[in-house]
Image (cartoon, rainbow, N blue to C red; front, side, top):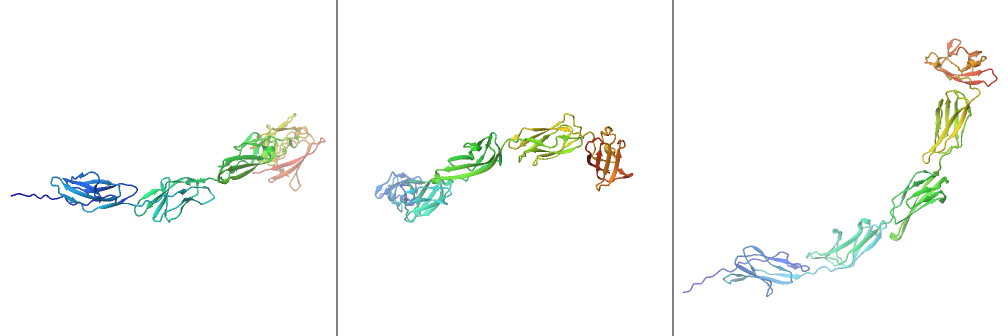
Length: 454
């Protein structure tokens, strides 16, 4: 007798293709199978063995990388028993159509002259999506139409650069980048320049006019009238120190981009010179106690005037706009006189040369008559003391109120100063007016005295 042993054949295992039954642009796909130990697996392309046999080990294994068009099957054979089996199924790798490539058109525009700029694809295929990318970032997608496509982008300087278009088959996922790139150049125009400066300049040395918003290739500065000075290509003016008057500065900015553009800005200003004074108008004589007004000549707008007075002369008030000052002479003026000096100053040009005036003591300055009386107070003005009366033994003094009524009179030596009364009664606070006759042939002295009571 003979015994026969029947061995089981290889288990049937379904083949798995990780990429699906397509091949895009020669891409490889893995054929994967859950293998069985002691079984060899052979792949056939048609009737021809494709690659080397793979020994099973009970694990999932890649049997082959498929990158050729054709129909693939797998056969299994048990080791030792030579039992064979065809694995179920087969799959076909077909050549799927890849999108055609078309040329791109570049463009150049001037910033500000158009809202958008176009990137044109000269042709397209229906069923294909076309994706525009800028610096690796997708910006927009258009479906193919079977004709040219236009992608619109913002016309601004940040859009400058190269763009790519990728065509994708929406059914198979096959894609390809167009072989050419589109270059977009958005040329910048030029800004409207702005000029900044002072409303008044001094015609000595140099001054700077500042310009902003300047982005042209060429700048050209001019100054008019030309007699006022010169200006360099940075806006620095060198003044003609003899010119005074109005000045216009112009800046022209131009560029060859965008077919050539030119813009101009102007700035109007004035030019003055170092301030001068010819003389100080006013009395050449004064007496102690006088308050007199003095005035500089000529007067220049925008100037300030520094009054320099000696001890005993006080500036009561001054007006730079009028060039005047009220000066009070509170001390005796020496025989040789005293000097008053004024210096003009301008913000633009600084301090000019000073002018002096000599004021001498007048002929009628022997008496010092106070202009205030404070009866009952503890100060020196509690009675009306007139200095220098001892030199005039025939002095005649009369005092009147505001209505012209006489309230006090003295003839001869003024030995008992007036105390602000009339017929023994205190006079009210008010201003009174005096006439003093020295009886020496000189002019009478007139003025006012204010009685002040607590």
